Amino acid sequence: MFDYAPAPEARDIVDLKPSYGLFINGEFVDGSGSSFKTINPATEEKLAEVASASSDDVDRAVQAARKAFGVWSALPGAERAKYLFRIARLIQERARELAVLESLDNGKPIRESRDVDVPLVAAHFFYYAGWADKLAYAGFGTKPLGVAGQVIPWNFPLLMLAWKVAPALACGNTVVLKPAETTPLTALLFAEICRQAELPPGVVNIMTGAGETGAAVVAHPDVNKVAFTGSTEVGRIIARAVAGTDKKLTLELGGKAANIVFEDAAIDQAVEGIVNGIFFNQGHVCCAGSRLLVQESVHDELLESLKRRLGTLRLGDPLDKNTDIGAINSAEQLAKIRELSEAGADEGAERWSPACELPDRGYWFPPTLFTGVALSHRIAREEIFGPVLSVLTFRTPAEAVEKANNTPYGLSAGVWTEKGSRILWMADRLRAGVVWANTFNKFDPTSPFGGYKESGYGREGGLAGLEAYLDV
Ligand code: NDP
Image (cartoon, rainbow, N blue to C red; front, side, top):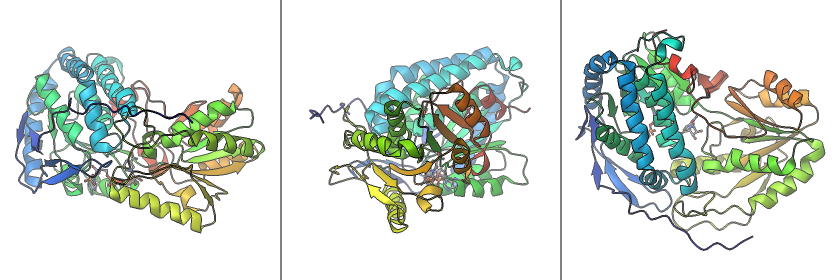
């Protein structure tokens, strides 16, 4: 393995304020709830104090969004598109600032926030800007729903915001969005970008806070549409809160994806895909390939290559451009990963990690493999949401399908084989919203994303993503 000289990205491009308010009706205002601090998970240093929105604040934001809906929905689509294109270009102009801030608040490597998250965020706004004046051709009508209440998680703070805000605005809706408690800062910088783009006041409102703030957004009687990404557990609470109302609901929840490697696959490519599948973003990915299903005949060969490759991953400072694995987002998430990993070892699976030094401060977990995993083990059934891979084996394609589908989730899957016919045969049988062939974790704004079973319902992205924001 090479020695790398440190290559830290400068953080002074980010102008961190000591405290942040809520973004309501185009202005930053004080919240009436108590504030909370957001920290850098790589160092545990406090980054800023952030306002927590009470249900009164949420009410003010929903009223602002309702008023703005009259103006925004009456604009011709081509006019709305101009704003969305402007936002997309500002995101590109301020890409480095957004990437550094995302890595500071979330702990993800700058290489990922710079090369994956932020470019995809801009691409999402460009893509839906293109739809704003063409809704009549999409097949879902042209009538927006009204005010959208949106609640997003901490794993891709800005990207999840883009997935929610861009299609909502393109269709003529206005938005009240709650970012996750541990990662509010890029949503607030996005609010500043909305001002810079001179978006009419009230079209986008950002409500920082904890779970109760999210619950207040979801429960507000004047919200017409709820969009949520997060855990299946909270998804259930939200489905209950919305049941019996005429709110439209989309849920994007957890996953436990199978990444299936056949003996005829290009093993070195598959190893790269497995690493990308589970160690990208510290494994904090709902569609992560957290269950590796490998054909028995190539198990030993593949495991040997995989272990060699894991030995080259660099864990550490998220702002260092060499870093592959950054910090775990919070102490709570770290405790959950530890607990499930211990359960894996207790249930009899064999645990392995490469030699890897963890920094003294902050939240860290080494890349970890479990072999000898049975389908009944907790590490094969529950979403770990961390850099932990469970390895299982199969002998025949039918057994691979059976094992891959043996999960309450159904968000994504991967298939590695040289045969196109086998890819199609597998894709037909896998109960997953997305099936990647000889690749993994590939995202594109034109391509719909969403789940089956306990992974939720509704689709985000692509033409299908418009449906959720129109009165069909
Ligand atoms: P949650 O589902 O709790 O959080 C997602 C968002 O919902 C956050 O903004 C959260 O606020 C908010 N929220 C929490 N409770 C409520 C509520 N009752 N009503 C409305 N909104 C609410 O995920 P966690 O962050 O707690 O992560 C727990 C587990 O969820 C992870 O370990 C992982 O397995 C899974 N997860 C899955 C994701 C996915 O993309 N599928 C994303 C994130 C997590 P706050 O941040 O303040 O808690």
